[in-house]
Image (cartoon, rainbow, N blue to C red):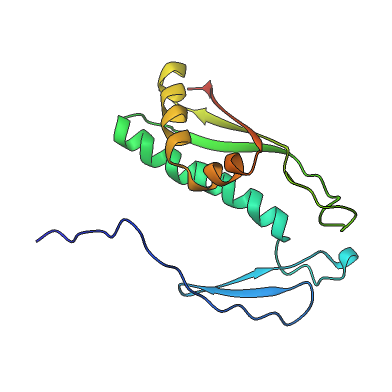
Length: 153
């Protein structure tokens, strides 16, 4: 008998905040640490909150991109993702409220693959439909560009 997957789930956790800069978040059987660098009063035990947001976007692009490639029968080959982000730090520096903290993000998904550029473009279009983190950034007003590039085979 096939198990039915719930389409909407609720996540719960309770984070510990041992310092003003470090947050320890239990997720599944993992202990995730988000921290500030030493120069901002942290202990540098993990990425900052804004770095974590960028890392989540990159990881979501990778995961959802591979799922779509598999669904479409496209071999992505070896993948690297370059990220370029503009962060308006006036908000996190508490200089003024910022409506769009990440005004612009550009990802380049480099695929060393036998697939054609047209196939990669299709994977990119499908990934844009389903990447939850990309949707969050776009809904917040970020100008998000994701380029899927065939590097070589």
